[in-house]
Length: 150
Image 1 (cartoon, rainbow, N blue to C red):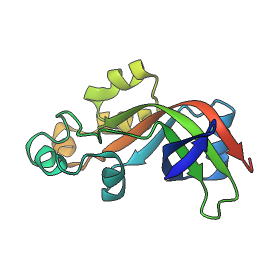
Image 2 (tube, rainbow, N blue to C red; image 1 turned 120 degrees about the vertical axis):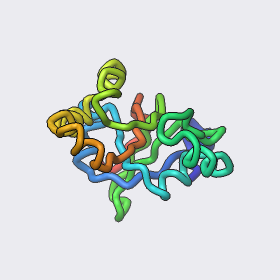
Image 3 (cartoon, rainbow, N blue to C red; image 1 turned 180 degrees about the horizontal axis):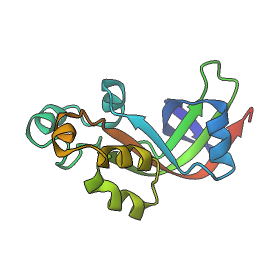
Image 4 (tube, one colour; image 1 turned 180 degrees about the vertical axis):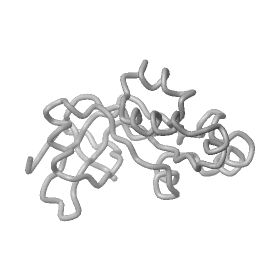
């Protein structure tokens, strides 16, 4: 999606969001946006020509095959477009929230997965092996660029 920022047209990543979370971004309490990995977000964020090989050979640990040109702005809105919020994206990450990645997440300042990781730690080794772990895209958010309706 294309938006205008400072009289310049830029590509933005369109993301549906509830208004309460948009307000948290504006007031500075929400610094990360988390989306579960799914075919929808895979197509928006990954180079789909390299994706099948990555899924087959090194998923989830190999180098994530990001698109060559990722949007530098997230365009948040609700379904009715009663508000919009454009925010700088500082960094994209592909996250596997397990105990082995906890220190790296904390070093990054991301605590969104703490509860999930703590629950995983309570599992026996046998239970942990049988547990399906979700994967996530995490966007580190920067400055608010534009907002309307908040």
